[in-house]
Structures are given as C-alpha cells and as structure tokens.
Image (tube, rainbow, N blue to C red; front, side, top):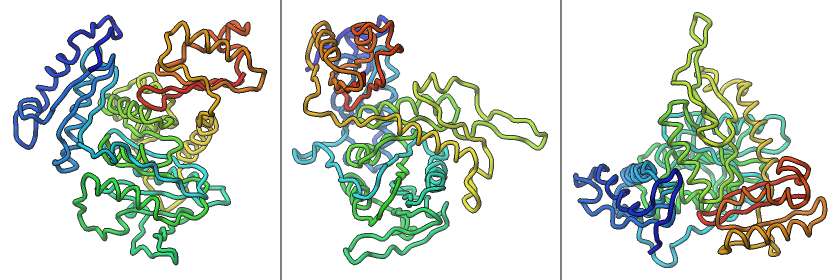
Length: 427
C-alpha cells in the first residue's frame, strides 16, 4: 500500500486515510440507512501522497443513487484537510473491462467539444445547444449536437424535433436535422419512454450511439454530457474522442465549488478544459437596473481557468426560434480561440520521459534537452508531477530573464492522467 507523505498547508499526511474515514461516517447510505462505513458500502480507503482512493460497492445500485453517493464520497474526501485529489472506484470489473475502450472519432469530424456541468439545473443543455448553433453560423460545413444525457435527453424538446430515426443503407442511424445542426439523442429513439439502463448497458449505449450515427462531414460536434461526475460522464471522458470541454455553472458558491471538483475529473482523464460559462449571472428588471441572482464571487480565481462568458438570466438566451443571442456568438468565438491555443499533445516517440526521476535529475535533463533545440523547434517532456516550475528554469538556461521573456514561442502544460503530465515548449 502506498505510504502517506507530507501535504500542502503544513497538514501532516500521517493518518490521512483515518481522517478521511472519519469524515465518511457523515455520509449516509440511502438504501440501508446508517453511514456508508457502517453499512459496508465503502470497502477501502487508501492514500497515495495527496490523492485519496475510496473503493465502494456501487455496482448493484440504481444509477442515480450510485451517482449521488459517489459525488458525496468525492466531496467529503476533498473537504478533508491535506487531500488534494480524490478518486471513487465503484465497480468490480473483469480483466477485460478495467479500462474503457476508446471509440474512434468520426472520420470527417474536425473537432469534438464536450459541454458539462457539476450540477443539474444550471442550463448546461441550453448552453450546449446554443453554442452548437453559434458554431454553425457562418461556416460552410455542418455542425453536430450529440445528446449524451441518457436519463434527461432534453435536446429534442429544446430544438423542437421528433423521431423516429431512420437507418442509412449501411445500417447506421441517420441524425435529425434541426436548422443548421444535425442532431442525435436517445430521446429520439426512446419515444419518451423511461430508461432503466444502468452499468455496462448505459456505457455501451453512449459509445454505440455516438459511433453508430452517420454524422457525415462536420466542422464541429458538440456533446451535451449528463450533469455530475457519474459513470456515464466518466465513460464519455475515457472513451469518446473529446478535443476540449466547456463547463457550465451558476455563480452560486456551491455550484462553483462543485464545478472546480468536476474540472479536476476532466484533467485527471486528460481532457483539455477550454473554460467556464457562468450562466444566470444577473437579470434586468422593469426598472432598467441589473440585479445579481447569486452572491458575488471571484469565479475565475476559484476555478483556475478562464471564464468564457457570463450569460444573463433572460428569455432570449433560451430562445431557439430566432437568431443566436449575441452573447452566445461571443462565446463561440472564445471557444474557437481557446481551441487554437491548445497544441497537439500526441507525444512523439522522441519525447523526453522524466517520470520516476528525482527533481534535480529531472531539471538537469530538461535543461539539456531544451538547450539542444533551435528556435522554432519543439521540446516534449513527460513527467509524473506538475512541470510548470521548469518554465523558469528553461528560460534561464537560454539567457531569458524569466519564463515570460523571449525564451518561448509557446509553452503549454497539461495533465493527461492522474500521474502523467506533458509539457510542450516551442523555443
């Protein structure tokens, strides 16, 4: 078992697992009553440096209940002083199911963008559908919208479209056209019948519906993910070819805090975060003044990522019959700009792998690699810890005063997995 180590803010890591267990005693098992520990729902708590791993028997529970428990376990673990990350392992998988099989992206789709939220009711589907409409404006190619919310497929209602879905000559599902969008949703197939899928059945439904849809040639495909951090969201992050994600939140402090934790899940699974949309920021009354709906907060600082747009609480934001609202058009431009900033993080074979090395050796080898490059050449570094501090070291090594000087044409650091970071530096 991994040993505890010192953690930030002078909080000793000794006994961290015990402190997390004590915190989990406050989480109730809604099925049998009592705490998740007393009922045996939580089977193990282990610590690897600042990351807590909680194992729980969630496989036999209904999907919404399992999602709620997993979210409560994650939130409680993260609230324990000294915990930086928390993972919830909830299903016993056979050897051939230990990792989600990544689905090949549609051959003629340039970019796949996921829209997600930590909570329901924040306007995620409205933002996803309006963003897709805005991205379709002024382009010669189609834009697609994939409704991956199996238990609340609201896209058909928003866009006023109905099934049934036809099949192509090759046996693939033909998406429904709504204005400038091509759309696929389980709501077009289920005919408003309640869905009782759970576990592997739900996972396969998301992947197969995505893969079996005849999307055609698309410039962009927007995926409307279910709210929360449950199994379907995790499966989508691990299996669908997502190029970047947009998170949606309200300004409410609880929503912002949960969105921050949701962002961690995306980063742990190697999904680049494009930024956050703050929905329902304010409303204008008949008096002509703007009023905040929620307490003011420094959202950009709290989320540690850019705020792409702050949308007002107005009916026109939810209007799909007329022109795309100006705020959404601006949001689409911001999303395009963020996508342009994301470099291709497919790591080449010649990348310098620094994982497992001590900090002095890691620094020495990174500097040596960077010094050997010519202007315009790219250095790829793989590490098992955040390599951001190397930027100053590399800049100093070639004579720049600091990392913001003329040492880099571009420098990007991104987390691809819990213990895998990539640093791409163009000299």
